[in-house]
Every structure is written in C-alpha cells, then in structure tokens.
Image 1 (cartoon, helix red, strand yellow):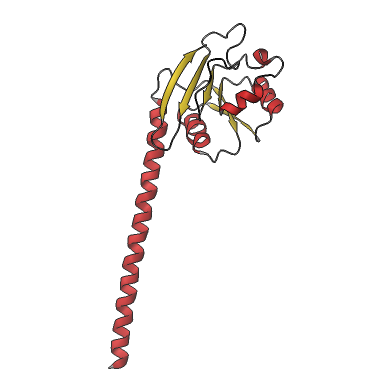
Image 2: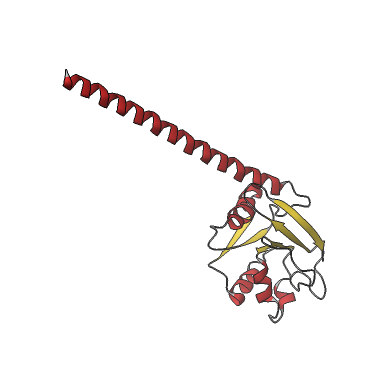
Length: 178
C-alpha cells in the first residue's frame, strides 16, 4: 500500500505542477497579447495624426539599432503601416548621416534632439536638408530656434514636429510651422 500511496501523491503533484505551468503560460500569453495590442494601438494612433507624420511616398531615415520604443514604433512601425521607404544608417555619425539624408533624398528625419545639436554648426546644412519635409523629435520638444528644417529659404510645407512615444500612450505634443 505504501507504494500505491506514494504513486498517487506523485501523480497529484505532477497534476498540480501542470496546472501551475498552464496558468503561468496563460499569464505570459495574456501579457504578450497586451503588449501586442498596445504596440498596434500606438502605431494606429500615430497614423491617425493629421497631417500624417509619415506618408506612403516618404523616404524615412532610420538609425540602427532600432531596439528603443521610438525606433520600433515611431520609425519602423509607421514605415510599415504607411508602406513608406526606410533608409537605414548603421549608427549615428554627424557627416555620414547627413550624406545619407542628402544622397537618398530623405523626406522624414525622426531623431532625438542631440542629433540636431550635432548638426547645428555643419556647413551647408540648409542644402543638405533640402529634401526634408518633416523633422520628428521623439524625446523632447524641438526648440523653435532649431536650424534644422528651418533653412534660410524654407522648403514649401516643411514642418518641425515634436512627438512623445511612451509605450501605448503615444501622443503628439505640437506642430510648429517652419
């Protein structure tokens, strides 16, 4: 009888552990679904902004790595959603990134404010950013005195836009005409 009792106890332990494991798997699946829903909601919310941040005919600058929420949602997510073209830079380099923007005729430049600070004193900046339609800032408002996308002779319709991308609570904070 001792053997039978031990067998039954082990079977009950195994059944309990399976239930716990299934609960854990379900919990993880629910969490993944919540993250997926938040990501899609974030992308759809940004796509609904008028005028659009990124349009199908845009050429968008992407700076690798795109592991941050801004790179994934605001840049890659919007490019895929709008079926725009993405030009990737292998990391940020002051001159190299500007050359890429100029050579590929990039129309949307989503960057963090420090990038604009690095570009501030670059020669011929107005010429090199002539193709840019929108400069997006993902971590802080763009200063109204920013030289980027505010050339001596402004490109028609060029706007600076400050955006905040925080998980599923993305919202646009301001649109400043050039």
